[in-house]
Length: 246
Image (cartoon, rainbow, N blue to C red; front, side, top):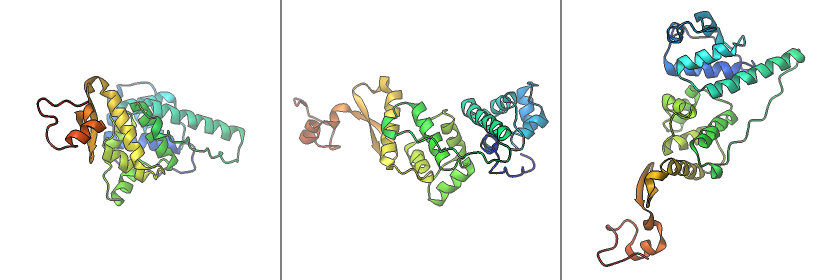
């Protein structure tokens, strides 16, 4: 990865964008030269331009940001939002020289009770991270390790980019590290609804049941009071021949 870069100034309006780009390159394990090779001469993506993009000292063009994210396999939607915010902050500084950029209240985390789709869960996790001060992937992993939990950076990066769903244990660790005030059980139920929604066509007469951190399919009838009262929960294979669950 070459020489370690100078830390980004926290008060810089470019800090969120620059940190996002640095995290992408770290996860991808690419040098700037390798990124240039991947982009094959794309306009605005020279070695020097890509190197300046994540310094946090100058505002990169959108073409540079787009190429940087493309080379590292990142989320262009998130990058676009961060770049647009940096542009707005720069315009504010031009109009108000010497004045600090007003702090914005973080967007509230989506209520887990209203999460039913993968994109909603991913957005909630992104907002939760922003409310926690937008820590880097390395900081999130270190925070989880301090709590005795696992939060692999590469997997978390894929989750936050919307490329995969978190496991129950990963979601719980993320919620704890970000210090979300809601009970973790609410996030468990949100994840279950997302999983059920994605596999609705495969469930048929079954439903998902959680044991520890794993989900398994069980007959839907097994959750009914009649089934449980007559045949017991988890004892034996169910009704014997001639018996009928009503």
